[in-house]
Image 1 (cartoon, rainbow, N blue to C red):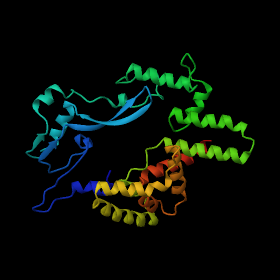
Image 2 (tube, one colour; image 1 turned 180 degrees about the vertical axis):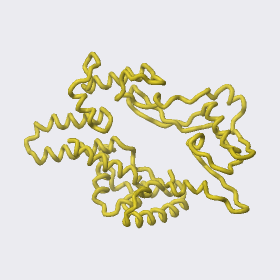
Image 3 (cartoon, rainbow, N blue to C red; image 1 turned 120 degrees about the vertical axis):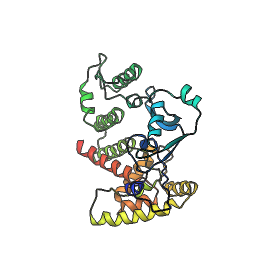
Amino acid sequence: MLPETTQFRVFEKMNEGERLVVVATNIAETSITIPGIKYVVDTGREKVKHYDPSNDTENYKVQWISKASADQRAGRAGRIGPGHCFRLYSPAVFSEILPEFSVPEISKEPLDGLKDFPFPTPPKTRALAEAERCLKFLEALDSSGKIMPLGKVMAHFPMSPRHSRMLLAVIQNMKNIYNYTRANLVLGYAIAVAAALSTSNPFHMQCEANYPDENNSSRNDKSEKVEAQKFCVHEENLSQKSLRRMARLAQEKFINPRCEALTITYVLQMFERAQSPVEFCQKHTLHLKTMKEMSKLRKQLLQTM
């Protein structure tokens, strides 16, 4: 994602003789209206998140859009004047392959935290059954589906049931560690791992990764913001292949061959020790916003414990 200041450039008035070209994801279907758009080129494709309840994993797939989405995309052209939509697929594809509507978001999310809720668009029965099975396996629910004391404790953690159960398992086993300092060290590592697993992978080099929060107005953050803007300009001039190579070289020092979670935990530790978070993320091609969220979650978990 681009920083907000760069995104808002689409609303700037064009000089005479210039043409505005906007490359956008499907967020531009309904969320925003850009004045002056006369032509829309619709690929007919979108990248959508899919959730597999059988193994509790999420992945992204490129697939055909729905007819409703196609109509929305066509409607972006000529909102305040004449316009035309060029579809990069045939009328036969539109009528025979494209579904009428997109799959509701509720069908793409894990449902471990939901049970017996009167949904306007109810999720699939199989997904609910798998979520209930997962909660019973984690001892959050008993065999009849009633919440157990352990489940009530798990509900206080701002994370998925699997990760909260992991932390509670560590606490339960701490009584077997007679060294108090060592027990606290183990708990600290467990909290850091849980925070790492509960957020996105920070190893994604994007311009926004090195861009401070827009709402932060301190003097230090303003200087960091200027540095990040300069880095973004530099980044835009590099090829994707070069960026991937830079990211790989910068991140090699953190790699833990045993587990990706331990790798990210080490990154979190070094991030919190860094004097300048922006410079640290720039140097190691990390996503600044993700690292901040991870650090905030770790501190929140420490307070919860």
